[in-house]
Image (cartoon, rainbow, N blue to C red; front, side):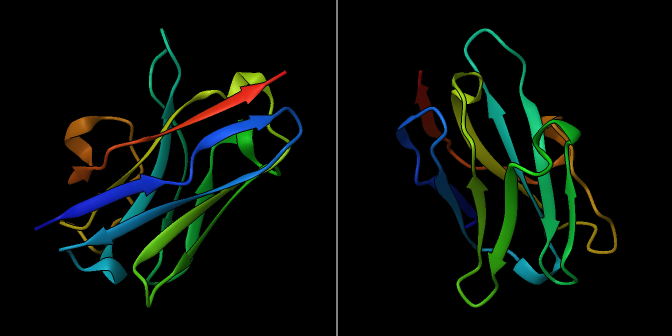
Length: 128
């Protein structure tokens, strides 16, 4: 059974940090592109960045470069998202998604149909 589960969210003060985890199972982790996304109330989903653990390729959305960092523990089949210097505008549900059907491709898309599976998100709330 394919599973992706985001965890680690919570309430944090502005300027604080959190580390989110995306634990996975049921698909070839080393061939997959795993992406981090968020959706704030009343706003569209946005992509934050993606990583292909097999070769270490990482891409970040410009708006989070320097503040957010993606890493992985391949043995645990887990991808992390380190959130630093958080501000209230970062309040959202953060989720992860994976693409592995085309292992030669780096697929990082907000479109449901482009990723092979989406996990349930974790709430991040940043207070001012």
